[in-house]
Image 1: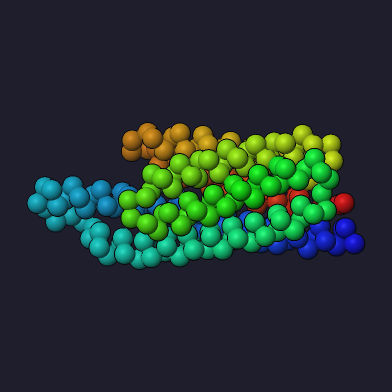
Image 2 (image 1 turned 90 degrees about the vertical axis):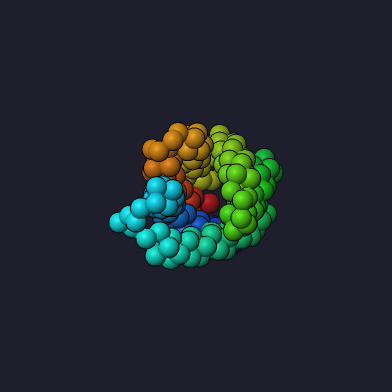
Length: 205
């Protein structure tokens, strides 16, 4: 019975992780491009010249895609939060607190994604995302160190993923190349996140 429930609920979590990870990777690929094109258009307008790129042609579909990906990220977060709540009931008492912290972290990530849809709320969204990543790192690290958590190998990979996201957040402050480095680190981190949760999903309990 426990094995069946573990498989069912971790599959729900994994599906949510897969959704939000794929959407976030697409977002990270597009965001630097949108920023670059916007900057080029601003410079061209300021200089009074007509450049090789019409930002209105590229930005509108790119922003539409970003909005869609943010909505998918929020749906993924909801699936993860629901799955974590379910799976917590069959864990040992010592493992429930880290899982509860992970639930809070994914709720914060959902809020951060929602804030991205609000004009001028980008900085607040970034801070909330960072808080979510730090809380996830804490939760995954405690599960990795737990003698009773079944998916310690997966939790170890997830800890590394969160470290990459936090380091990427720091690189984001570097002008010109910061966005690209941050995006590369975040993409690697979300690939590791899928791998980590896949290991947890397939563990024998």
